[in-house]
Image 1 (cartoon, rainbow, N blue to C red):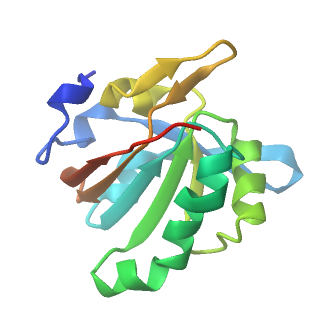
Image 2: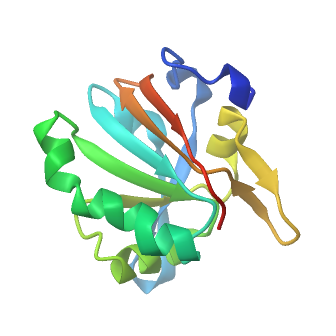
Length: 151
């Protein structure tokens, strides 16, 4: 685990061995190893406090969906959105936001990623993440953008 003040360009995510979940039809889910999604690729990861929250639904996630082509033109291989909601909520939120093949919606329901990043915040009903975006090149953070605002 690292504290949010220690987050910086150059942090290697590979040692973390973080598992996330992908929601599938028929209310099934599949465990996905973050390292497998990052290996040899340039990936943008946006982490939000929660699916279907006002700010995340109105502007944050749509800005990434709408900027997909611009990201691709800058060499980004994929965009991943995570939140601590379960995999099915993430799947349905992605459908509601027309993410299609542009943004992969993954659940961090165990809090493994937010804990490793030191970005967890406990709320009355569940652990959530603070908002942040990072650019990751072959598992190493090359851009770190902590969020502002609340949902």
